[in-house]
Amino acid sequence: MTEKEVYKMLKTINLPLAYDHFEEGKAPKLPYLVYRYPHTDNFAADGKVHARINALDIELYAESKDLTTERKIETVLDECGIFYEKTETFITSEKMYQITYETEVLING
Image (cartoon, rainbow, N blue to C red; front, side):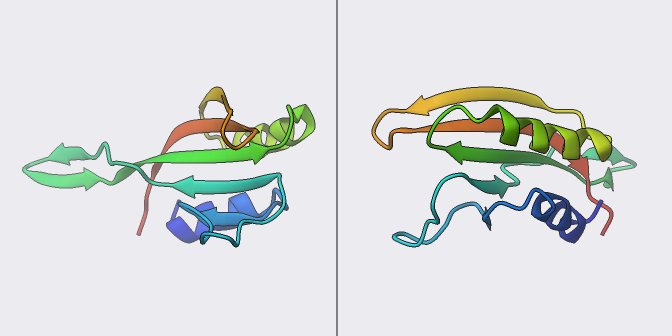
């Protein structure tokens, strides 16, 4: 996948989407998605990066538990053959849920 393909894949979920964060004061109404590449786990061969592997975090922010939207995200990831782990946190100060899908993608360009 390329970074553009990751973006296009996430856009098919039809929620507001931003890389890393929305500008302060410009966050859309919940639910929305944020994604980022927090680190790499590259594969080396002969002292060079042989395969660029980026960790990919996809975060769903929602007012309440939203199983329908979670299933939609999971279906898109499944259809793209992307394995993920999922964690859930309630952010008390913001009164919203954060559902994080942690995965890795092989970046081809």
